[in-house]
Image 1 (cartoon, rainbow, N blue to C red):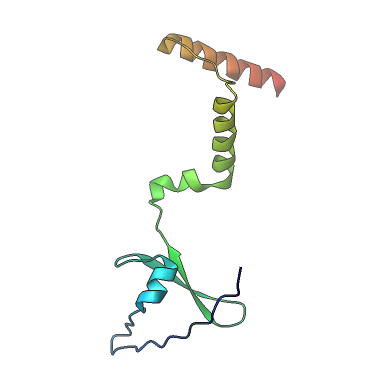
Image 2: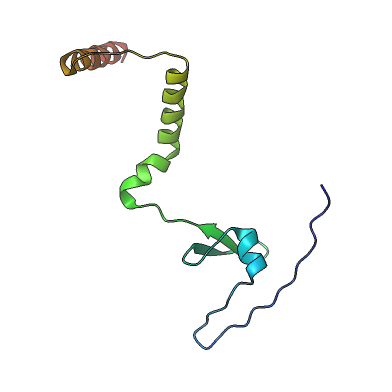
Length: 107
């Protein structure tokens, strides 16, 4: 892969502190009107624009590393057909109760 060409672009800041990103920069960052960007200070003391997205508070659990690990394990279990099926809610509850008792005995 050939080395990336350096691209220099100048921004003008208006009285309210606003600047418009050139079309090529927006395209390279993959951002559109209304998207969020993080302006992050680097270790070198420069600033870096990073595309960002907000996660609603009630969905933060899904992005926790432990939950991501558990979801990956569950997906692997499904793919490997390591699952248990129940036909009724009562059977499902009985199965879950057996799992709880098994875990308590091991503790």
